[in-house]
Length: 180
Image (cartoon, rainbow, N blue to C red; front, side, top):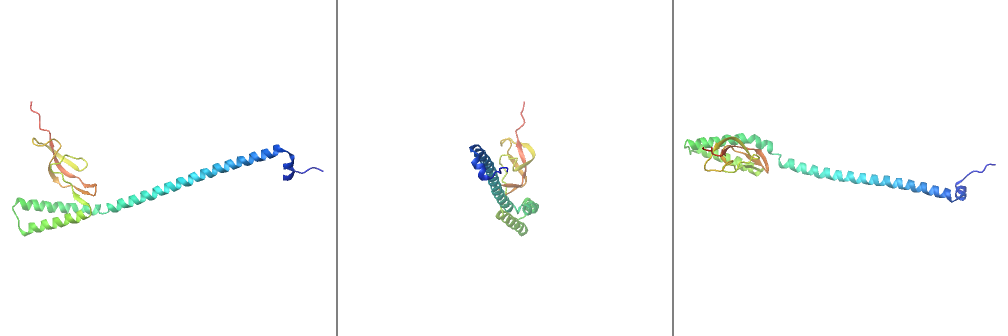
């Protein structure tokens, strides 16, 4: 009759079998711990990525809300330009009639409405040229002003909050020609 091995017999057979079994269990435990650590790191990374996504989404939504009026404001600027032109023409003609005053009131109301929604004019006249806020249409020599100074505003520029809605179209001073 052949002897069959049972777990009880294996324990009795000797310390080398027990040591092998213990080493095998330790190896499995180490592999399981490594897998656990990898999954834990992965879970932490996914959580951090998701939190960053949420923050970025909230920031993008706030920015979108802040600038939601931009298309409407951009569409209203040509009408505002025409009101400015009408007032300039009335001033050149010396017309101070009720019609000119009415146009001025409409222009003021429109500017106030835009201002309440964060739209402001870019003050350019006499300022140093800033390519982020101004569009230089031409240069003229200016003896009494430093070079790269706005001499004249051809079309008013506007900002919505801190973003340029439309740059001011300007004439910029150039250095006077050298005489030689």
